[in-house]
Structures are given as structure tokens and as C-alpha cells.
Image (tube, rainbow, N blue to C red; front, side, top):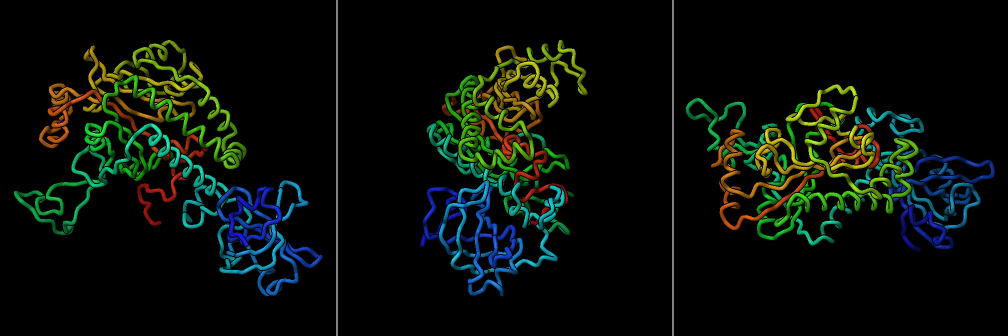
Length: 463
């Protein structure tokens, strides 16, 4: 007898096999002919497998006929061709073992559909629903694809620290890490004395692994980091999380054009892998969540990304005749409405914007020859706008020091970062992709809290 998954049992080639299946009951219906039909799922696929449980089973009356949604079972039996419509196979049970029951009166996931808002309150149970099972499988596929892509491209995977003393973005929206007694912290000269803290200085949860990844890129050429990052922004929108996952490649001897080439290959690989490996889940999202997700992904995979300087983008937007909520002026960051106009209406394909005004971008981006712009890039896609942000990094020591001073940063806090420019500096570049933003785009899910297993948002850290 083979222990197999529901996904495997649903394949026609499994017909005739003696198998053991284990999972959770979705439905049970009893026949007047003295047997029951069970639908079970183990998370391996969107679809369930039908179990035919005959009345001759030893525990038929005492347990099988009392099964309800949420009960856990092991089923031994034979896979056979199903006479029912919409399913290739079913399992004729020879034994049904009940492991755990679920009270019909209190189990939250009964037949009726629940709102996503309600399901967020039961994050410990929502993976059992069709939608969140599909999200988990797509998220897994995307994560696996990310690693495979970079490994195939010759990158090394680097683990950068979660606890850091530096603010990569200079935004200051960071979670502080401390072991000090907050009720009575030690003080020196009227201020909290962080010299007595665990790390001997103010320390925080990282907002990005980029700066540390640059260290390894300047020794090992091509690296990427993929892990959790944190932002203490008190925002309750459908696009923000306090804890989220980022993939950030950094490449020595890469300039901006190389960076754009890599980002385009990267997105196309992820989207194609999802289409190839999660067809059933993607059909579900296309049917139930957003009827355009399949069309959108296929179009992106088959397109050539437009590369457009920021200055030209501002000119196009200014001449568009569109009424935007936010005015378009050179020197201001573009909003999602501007980015969506470019990708959905003007070009009707992904767009890579580059060469942004230096005043609106972080200190580490390379200043262009015109002195007014930096070699930044944003990859824009339909429906969401920016999905990747990156740049060629500033490799010139004097220019980097000047940029730090412009943005009020203390060079002494970044002495090690400056050392990379003192000893064997090279042109280098990199970008970042938020995993949740990517999964949200792929699936069409409206709220980013529904594409991460346990969303961390203001006031929410229970699970």
C-alpha cells in the first residue's frame, strides 16, 4: 500500500493502486443504499478526492456517518475510475481511521462562504479554505522559483542580519530592539544610555538587507538575500505590512542596463513558473478573484518591457489629457495612478522607468552625468504600478559622502559601507522585490494581508 497525496490520487495513472490517504474532511453525504461519500483534502491540490465509504466498514455507524467538515482521517483503499462528472478518480475505502473530530456547532469553516475580513480573525484555520490553500501553494511556487532563478544565474544566497544599527532607507520608520527596562531605562546626561543596552547602541529590525548584501557582492560578485524585513509605518492600508519578505540581489560589475535586463528575466521566470506549476490554483484565482490574472501574466511573459526615462514619462503624463488626483511635475515621485496609466493605457505593457531626480531617491543611488538624476529604476506592471525598485549603486567615495551629507546622514555610522569604496570599488547594482506584493499581483488578491500566512499590522500580532 502506497501513502500518497490527494493530488497524486486524482491522476488517472493512479487507478488500480492500493493507497493510504490522509487529510481533512470537506463534506460528507450519505446514500440510501447504505454507503457514504466523503470529500477529503490534504492541501496538496485545489481539488478534493471523493472517498466511497461502504456500510460494511467496522466503524461506519459509530464514526464514519458522524464525520463533518474539519474532521481528520486516514483512508486506506483502492483508486478507481470515477463514474461521476468532473473527477477522474475516486477511492473505494477499505478502512477509515478517524483521528480528530470537529464540533459542527463551533467549527468556523462550515459550507457558507466567509469574508476575507472574518478569515483574518481565524488565521489558524484559514489555510484550510480553498482561497488560502491556493495562496499558500502559489507563494511556495514563487519562493522556490526565486531561489531557482538566482541559483541558475550563478548567484550565492547570503543571509543578511535581521537586527541592524543602520537605516538603509533613511526613513526612520524602524522597530527598535532593546533589552533595557523600559519602565526605568538607564540614563546619561538626561538621555537613555544605550551604551548599557545589549548591542551597546540603538539597534533595530532591518528594513532591507541591501547594504550588507553589497558587502558580499563586492567580494563574491553576484549574491542575493531573501528574508523578512520590517517597517514601523503606522498604516492600515491594503498595501502595507509591518513584516514582509524581500528578495534583494546585488551584482558587482553591473550597470543600470544590466540591472534592468536581470529584473525583466527574473519577473518573466517567476510568472512562467507559476503558470506551469500551479495551473489549477491560477484557474481558481482567474475564476473567483480576478478574471484577468491569467491574461495579464501571459501577456507579461510574452512582452518586451519598455524602458523609459523619468523625464520622458513626466512629459507623456503631462500631455495625456488625463485628470490625475496628484499633479505631475518634474521632481516629484510618480504615484500609482501615473504608473498604471503608463502600463495600462499608454504602452499597454510593463515599463521600466529610470533616471529619477536625485532629491527623491536614497543616498546610495549613483548620480548621473547630468548631476540632476540618479541611476534608479522602477519596474512597473499593469494593475499595481511599481513591483521592483532598484538602482546602480554609487561607487565613488567622494560623491557618496556628498550624498550622505545632503540627506543628513552621519558618515561615521556607515564607515564600513564607505570602506567598500576605498578598497577595490567597482560599479555595482541591485534591486528589491517584495514577495507579498508579487504574490498579490499574481493572484489578484485585493489585500496584502491575505497573501502572507500571519499578517503583522498595527494592533495585530496575535497569531
